[in-house]
Image 1 (tube, rainbow, N blue to C red):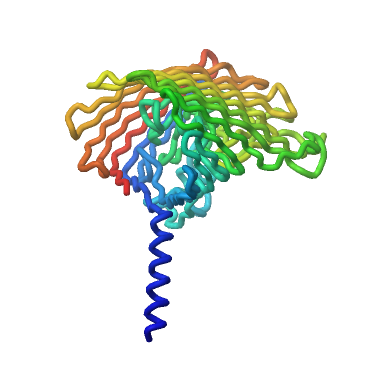
Image 2: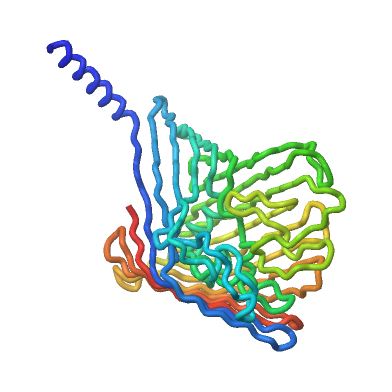
Length: 435
């Protein structure tokens, strides 16, 4: 009996010592509410397509997530870390419902996955947002290996007016999440009503990634990263048995008095073996019309964990903010260039700039407003340069430090001299809770 008691005491003491040296934190965010989106597109001949979508939706201000964060003190100022974070869809998402009869009953074609025809399935699958292991050395910085948010994403979340909310209107982080418009709302040869959001301003996260972040010294932090998914230099565009995907990221973050200046650049390359006679095709979900023979209107870009398709994808983001006390002002510029690795004439480019302000009107009411413009160009096909503009208005009502209600309204407009125009507006009302 005494031996058993001594054994239990020893195990308890050992567990207590281990617990003192390491910790695991569970964290998360749930965001759900109502969203309504209206889209219209008019081609050069004057034909107009319209669509209006309403639904209970997910994450219109912030992406819902569940995460586990661990830290272990290794001594000497060194610690080990891990993060495992899943994206959640509390309202449900587009599942496996079959396509609608749009092809015969409306001017819209049959819907593709994740659009208005099949949004509403009760089934959903969590997606991995982050999963990495890292080490931190006091006075130097930290290194992380695994699936991670990109530097562009981190910058947009901390130093732009909308802070990566997922309602339309942002020019620096365009999105149509939650509305699920039909995949081909477009005006003839005009790219799409989504204001360039078919390719987005930047890639949100990458797999197979290693990053290094310095500690902030004299208000400045530097970051560098590499993506090595399958760096096989024997792969070619016209043959070989392996694919070649790799990239790099660089960023600088500087605090100067009440100002914050950030700049990040990331470039990714994907080379997929392709037979010499095989034509390029329009990737699913690009909202681009089919093109004759060999040239795709929008090369398949790098997405969240999606490593492109014979693409060179470069993305730049420069932002600044200044805290005046009563309000915080923001300014930013972004550029993205896509070039097909095998057909240089197949390319797309999106540039945009935006200004905005964010302020607490009362201790509980926070509001923001942003406006911007830019251009969206597809090369190698008969599509003219599109002028794009957008604005967004939003309000948070803070019930506590962790819970708020929100209302966001955003609008994007696209126009050309010969291919018509398109418009997108969206309003989101919801509740958000962090834990």
